[in-house]
Length: 465
Image 1 (cartoon, rainbow, N blue to C red):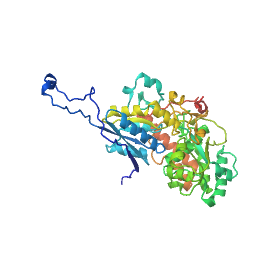
Image 2: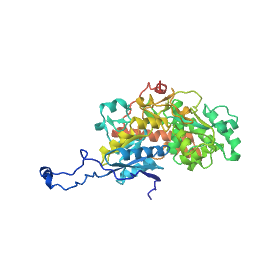
Image 3: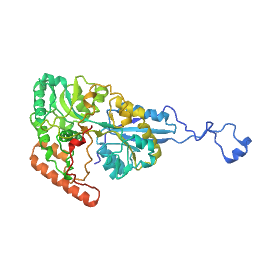
Image 4: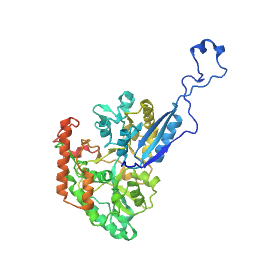
């Protein structure tokens, strides 16, 4: 059975047809014969009408949906080349939708990529290198980040927006539970969740939540940023040894499970998606959760918050910061390798990367600019809650870990199963280490992955200056 992929389609159509000029301002249809015998031309020559080029742009982001819809509409109305872009927002399983689209020959022309998808998409042959489109001005303006937008010497995208990860918390529930400040250790997080549930359960409020309908994103981001701040590779890769080692996740996953066992987590969160979670938080039903810097825009526009809330750095294992927390590459754009209209797709990308679009996006609080020439002149987003998400000294960019194909259950699914059903966490971690390193060894042997131990690797040196 093929799984149905939920989709919201935003077709931005023009009120009238666009006519693109072939040359000059008269647009008269001419031929060699007509040019030598003007008297034989028709009294009124028909204008040359350029065929419309229709493109599709797929994104998995919903928090900025209305703004980007307006940007796409403006492009459609002003591009002057009769290009029309249809924006499609995939409401769930974005990566799977991309795989299915390429497998069935129905891939979009432009794709939203992220720091954890651009490399696997490129390796699968989904993305078209854009080097031939890049002039000196573009190369100077946009940062080059190896293994992110430049892979094996080829450019696939340009950085535009990034995201920080923070603990989002309900200030009112914290005050009601007598908690003076957000937690700095995992132990405090567990205790705070229990206190909030004790004072809020009667009215349907609980201490903690994650959107486990997609554990790879929810559990992955939550465990990742805590592990990073505690000095461990947030995706389980040890750059010192160039091997996978999930031992550093033990305390993190144990703490998440303890909140489940304590009854401190929102009931039904195992089947909760991110937007229903946000809706519950906006209503005051969740004490805290971990998410991206897109949340202020969500609570200003998509789900207007009825409570006082804020964001704070995530807790660490023992309260000590031992590594940078990821400043993640967020909503970047790439051109499909199968598109028949690459030049037109690049023209759309150019429009999406203009200063006006990047600066406005930053100032509206949808994402934080990764382009120095934009972030240096953009105003601080005037949106409630953004202050806690702005990049600080302990944010930074981690190296990209190798992508491997693992036999059996992936780490986030294995940890999620443990949190809900129990088991032996030490054995689960040992099994993950073995299976991931077996997959790594196979990938290295095939030549699809290259790794090199870095004994001097220091996660503290990744922090922004």
